[in-house]
Image 1 (cartoon, rainbow, N blue to C red):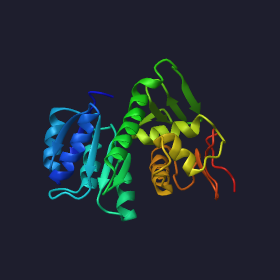
Image 2: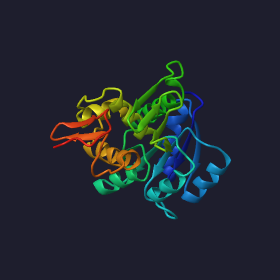
Image 3: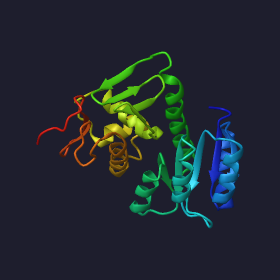
Length: 238
């Protein structure tokens, strides 16, 4: 992962200095922005492999910034937040964030989370190059070569974690997964497991691929157990 470019967007110079030192020690290239405006200016020049994004900033909050840049930027965004409110964590994921870590944090853990998200991003670009294949279901196709999804022959744009989650489910149709199992597969760790994280990503995924998210055809909730992928593309009876 040496040479990967990381943007740190945080209005706290001390946080910037500490995180930059740890990431640089691991061989990452780092760019720093103390505001949303600086982050947008950097994005006009180059595209990072991952962004670390604070929620509370003076000119624009990180959630709004994330929502805005997701129109043009599709690589991992890891929120670094000083709030412990669950609502803010959920909003960070709904806005397009892939992961979050709460301040104060262990810098070593932050580096591990960065590497984990970069590994998944690399998988989207490279892992399946030698396994050219498609997963095809009624009304839904997943191209594992190009990492694209079409619904009724229309392309839909999914974030990295949403695609990973969909593939994890679709590769094992009718297999019931506990949310913690899905978190372990997609986030590649279980230390920071959050049921709400999976719930938000399932919600976002259903909005993109389900004709009626309230009556899902593909991603089915199995009461008290978790989720499964229905390969038949029809609403299951109660």
